[in-house]
Image (cartoon, rainbow, N blue to C red; front, top):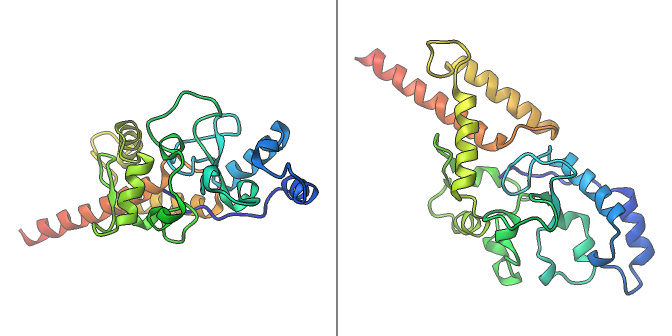
Length: 232
């Protein structure tokens, strides 16, 4: 999961809320398809073209508008409040996926909010760790929120694990023949490049947060092996 830094809402949404907030139609169900597309464009841009939950690549036509606080629990204008909106796979009315927004459904309720690691939370990315096989786990084994979020969003589903594993393998593979993996210097350059892109927000490589984590682990592993050889 990558932290999303919310920007100002699109002007069209602000104007729509201002025009409808005192009437009976200030709800997400009344938002036109044209305005929804404008909202998706804004969300995709601020998310670096990555799904808010899974980290898969998205564009305006391959995602839907997801409510962090489920619509079933929204009150007042919360279901059209921009800070409650993110872009996620798949497209509206697509077959259900076994992970991400579809699996999350109406979770969390108000009483379960403390167990939801939101992509808007500071430090959310650091609460998850990935091994070289693409498997995810809480960075802190005692982090109940991370555990529950992995479960409720299906972040450990085999499909996502396979996607991440493929991306990690490509990232760690050295470009020159005869070399199994990146040397620490090249790995640091690669990681800095990913971090630089991440700070700029768009466009990002799929699963960039997992790639950064994998590169950190790779550098540490190579350094430990090198230290052992020197002692031998």
